[in-house]
Image (tube, rainbow, N blue to C red; front, top):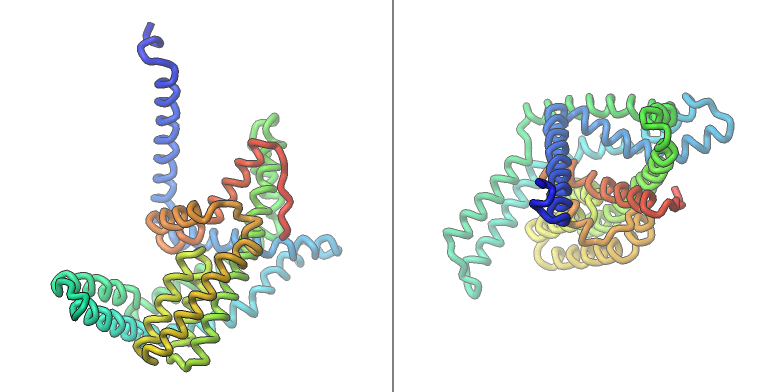
Length: 348
């Protein structure tokens, strides 16, 4: 009799709501646990993304007859040169962070003066409060020397840990995956294995594509900054490159910072040129680079990507914004496979 108290549609809705709440609770618990081991989580995420990008190289070396350990070591060593260059560039550009903070603060003050003067004439009190919030965030983003030394040690620890995890993922990744598949019920193992292969192909294509897009963004905007003689060109180029790993929003924010710094250091004419370059790069990224390079892996509407990046940033900061899109892409691709049963061939 109790089963007739609610109509069928209400019982089904309640069941799905209970499932959604359970999934949300499990996700919140997982994020809370990862926050307690943030360094390990970041190293593991970086290793997985790098392994996805380097797996095609290691696989071709194994096909050519190289031992698994040698193919994995070669893949890791392929990162040695760009990683060394990146460390050198970062060590040089990190010394410019206080100057970058000062330039951005000056840009904010200039915008503040424009907003409180004619013809805009906003309330000075409200503008000052907004200015203080922005400047405070900028000050928090630039660590003091002691905190900077701690960050360097943590970064080196993370790099070493990520390197070890990357090596074993390239060497024993297939064995680890089949060990995971063996834990599934026997009747579902074929679908689990195929879903994993689909997810890995998607992640591999995305990792290679987004790195290439970020490099092109940094090359275009960085070249303009160096030609114009912007004093903080190196730091801004690194910022644009890192921002390129956050689709759409990352390049927009880092490009805006480049325009503001150019406005303060080189004047309005140079800032307009940089703004034009940023807009061209953004259009190139949105209409050419992403559809051609990343689009085959991320078959998701841009609105969904923006929502995923925003949610990831709110939940996990920069790391959450970086992993949000590949997570959505992998989930979408695996769901499409489970729904249709058709594999998707993705170039890697």
